[in-house]
Length: 453
Image (tube, rainbow, N blue to C red; front, side, top):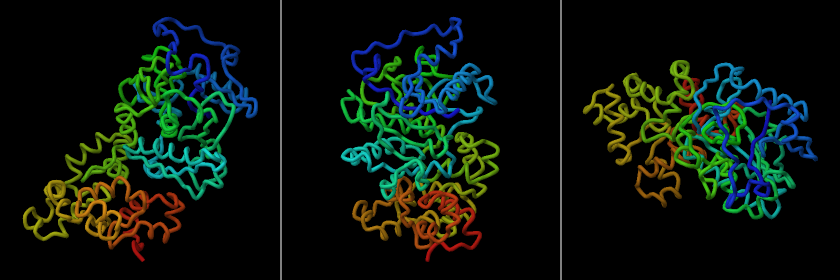
């Protein structure tokens, strides 16, 4: 059953941020009488213009009354009917579908393009700014939202040039609502009610959208877990971290502890990192390593980043496995005779340690695809910003430059590669530079594809 998620309107009874009373706690050990469908339906609110029922204050259920009944029966069945779903319950929590994490794949997570409809009128620029702020907060981990401003004039659910659209609505019972990764394109919308531009108390529009973008990454409401003792929704989720009452995904009115804006906490980032991986460090990108080594992906699964890192340190580095787009130990040794003389031709661990300990600060290049000296020389704005600060230039590349499609070496231009290979662009997206880089490293070069004009 597809159902959408969002934030309750502050104008609803019991949903104010300040001076409000939390719902009474429930005794999680007491026997609970099963709610009848009629009782479930009576608590739901029906959007008259769409025929969509809204449950739990802000969760629309698609499919009219038949969809509402399906949602009711799914909740009655509970997690036991979901194949492979564990019982460990501690958020940040991820939505599950048939017992599997509802998340973007590795190639998708680094290219999540969206448009902001021009039908926002005078509020368009405000929404663009708030979306950028909300996206930046989640991009502390290995995900990348991209505003496709060229699509704003045709920003509808039928536009397949973006992953999702951001559109205005009015008169709804929520401030905003979003979607989960498993939804089809027609349902992948972030809808912002006109009430979001009025008095929302301590909540800013950016804070509201931080919550919504959490849903688009697969994260559920924190308060559905038993520690909240109220606002229960269902059990179709998996634990990622310890419970956090201040989480951006926890409603304050559901016994949450946050009384300020909806901000991402350290626990939220830890949970997001557990699902999508951290941004790469100066020598090792764990998501890159795991997903570009099929044997490890099969052995560990797509989110066991701890196992992947342990494998790298124990054996992967000595097996000459590639660790990131910007560092390739065999290439590093082959390029510098002084290092081969000092360490030998196959001491890849020593090569890694040299790169981290001093090589990057000396301006040495770490791979065919990334030459820090070339990167600074080629991009005048970066040269003006960083001078000869090679470490800062590397940090820019791994957190921004690659995703912007900047050229990183004389031998490879990722923008050219995507433009020259329509099959790659069709498979990953016309601006998915991170996925295109991976394709070149592991497939394209071996196929004899050109990396530069």
